[in-house]
Image (tube, rainbow, N blue to C red; front, side):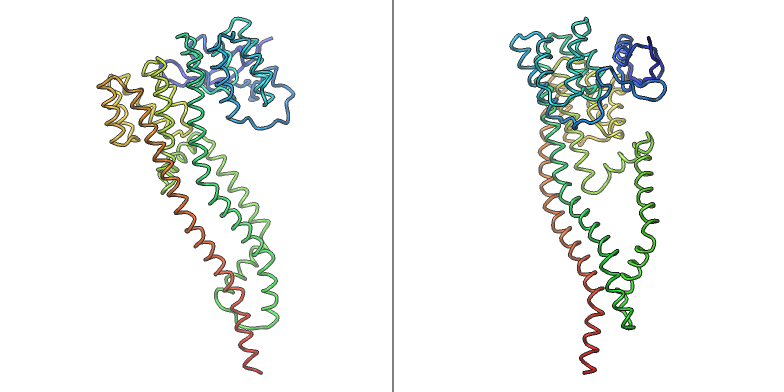
Length: 410
């Protein structure tokens, strides 16, 4: 029995195509696309429900898939293949030790597909949740060159590098995010419970309140009376923003804006380019042609704006431009990086110099993250102190005035 699947994929020329095909399951659909020279990006049942292979049915609750498990998979595959263990036996061993249930089931599916005559990269393509297009492309190169064990250790190093970059960015943003969230919760509690209690006392005394107190009491009264409307507006705004950012046009605009944002934009740009440079260097070192390596490396970038810029490099190279000229046309690389690319082309050491570029970007990210953390902490402390001072003055100034009046009367 066959099912209709809608799909989108990328051709060898780099064009994105969409269509509908019939296959027994999503794995067979991926195999058909790969056989036609199309790298699948998305495969779903034509009715809109994502096609699940049989091994995924019935799984409702599960723990989150950790990137460390994919790193462990790549490292162990390298070790086992280098020791001469057949690939099916290696997958069987890793299936038994898998922590994530769906990942373990995916490894079992890979083994079964290999035993039926399919290639490892083709079988991996049916599990995009665990195996990215970049990883699948690298495995294809390993199968073609007979260096699959070497490919897996390079993939392990790449995933380790990517994890380190992500962790550094998250570490820099964790503290300010926590402080801002705590401050927001505190302001909500003060507006809903604390200020109304003081406002009742002030009204019963019939005294003139300072401007700052009147503003705080007015905002608190509005919050207490209209909190359902405000909650609906906040939830609706967040939902509308997420829907807009999920759309192709919205995602492109957001990804471009975030890279132009003060301080954090430069940091994210360098982190993305470090990942791209490391990926391109690894692909070239493994024997990929420059156009294929670019296609694979672009897939490692999660920013649509940067992806669009980097894809122009391939178009430029197809027109006969050098790698350096094509990189310059993107407008995302610094003059120093372009100089290193030019030297790499002249000496035939592009992959080595790209690795140095990635290392330089990584060092810059580490330094900027440290300076960012050092700069954010005093700013947050000053902002928090300002809010506390504003609330304290608004609440206690009338009490001081009342105390002064009482002393004068006595």
